[in-house]
Structure formats: C-alpha cells, structure tokens
Image (cartoon, rainbow, N blue to C red; front, side, top):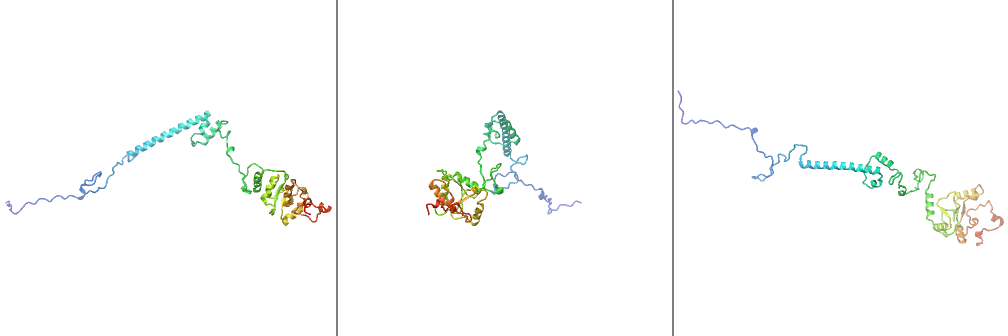
Length: 297
C-alpha cells in the first residue's frame, strides 16, 4: 500500500557544496602600471617587471658591458702595436723620438737591453748623460757620523772651514798686499777704535785672511783686551822652542791700523800683548823703544 502524498509536505533540496578556502582563486595582476580605477590606489607590485633569466638582468646593461669590453680589447691591441713600433724605432736609432713619447712601464730587462744596443747614440743615459749639469754639489757643515761632504776625498770639511771659505769668497777687492800670507784670528772684542767688521774689511782689502777658529795655521791673534791665563801660559811655553819662528804673534789692534796707515807691514815687536818678564828682549838690553812707541814717548 503506497501512502499518498500529503499536500503539506514539500521536497527538501540538498544543501549547496561548501567551497574550501584553499581552493579559492584570486586574480592577481602580473603588472600593475596603473592605479585601481575604483579606489585610486596604486596596487603593490607583486612581480618584477624584468625577467631574472639570463646572466644579466637588463639587456641595456648587457649591451653596455659588451661595448666596454670591445673598447678594452681595442685599447689593448693598440698599445701592443704601439710598443712594437717603439721598439722597432729604437733598434733603428730613433732614440730622440722615443724619449719624447708618452711614458709607459716597461720591464727592466728590456730597458737594459735597449740601452746596451744604443750605446754612443744621442739620448743614451749611459754614454750621453746630462746628470752632472743638472746636479748641485752641496757640502754639509755637520761633523761626526752626520758628515755629508763629497765621498772619495780625503778632505774633511767642518763648519768653521766652510764658513771661512764663504767669507773669503765674499771678500772685497784687494787694494794692497801688505798682509799677504797672514791669517788673523780675533780673540774677543776688538775695542772701541774699530769694530770687528771694519777690521775684517781692512784685512781683506790689504791681502790678508781671517778665520773664525784658532788653528795652527794662524799667524796673528788680535787681542786688544789680552788673553786668558791658560792661553797666556801656553803662549809663553812655546817661546824659545822648536818652531818658535812660526809661532803665532799676539798683537793689538793698533798694529793693523798703523800698518794700513803707513802702507807697509810694520814689526809686531812694539804691539805685543804677551810679554815674558823673565826673558829680556833686545830692546830692553839696548835701551831702545820699539818703532810703535817712537811717536808716543
């Protein structure tokens, strides 16, 4: 027996199929050059506009690098050709043209070989060097281990010797030669009659020389105020011994002034500063006065 359908019962349709969130499809644009027309906002760039495939990311960069590589290759081969032409020019004897060209780094062995092949030619630094004409020779005034004088010579230059040499070169023109062969040394102040500079000018103008340090070569010591006790005793001990004729004469400043005034080299006997009281002189024995005292009795 089949039951009859009731007019109040309606068929129920099956529920719709639920879609999972993992299967939802989103339409994401690959490029977003323009803003969203509805909102006006710029969409995020989720993908790069340029492809990552290949060695370089940009074709423009690749073309630029290729051009640079071609330029470097061309410069390399041009420089090799230029070096080859320069070496051929040197072998032919065109040394002057090579020196005027642009400086380039070359191996030392090649430079040595080139110089040996061009011996005697103009521009060769071995046989035709102009180094002496471009060199200034300087004599150092230092002493001891800091000496910088010319090597290979037996001459030792000290500050006093260099200074004396400079003063001799700067000396004035000679008027007379009364002091020729005399080497003067000034011991202390020269007094009020003449200054140190005036005496040096008188000595230089009359053929004499002066030094800034007392050495065995000095012939006269100008000491208007006398010598110290040690120097006086040393001077007295040297009298009467070997070489006493070459002994330095200690005189007053008046000896130079009177000699220049008379025009002749006067005797130093009347102008001595150091006198030995234990040894009488010829003047004291004969009762005479030196020539310098004749005008001042």
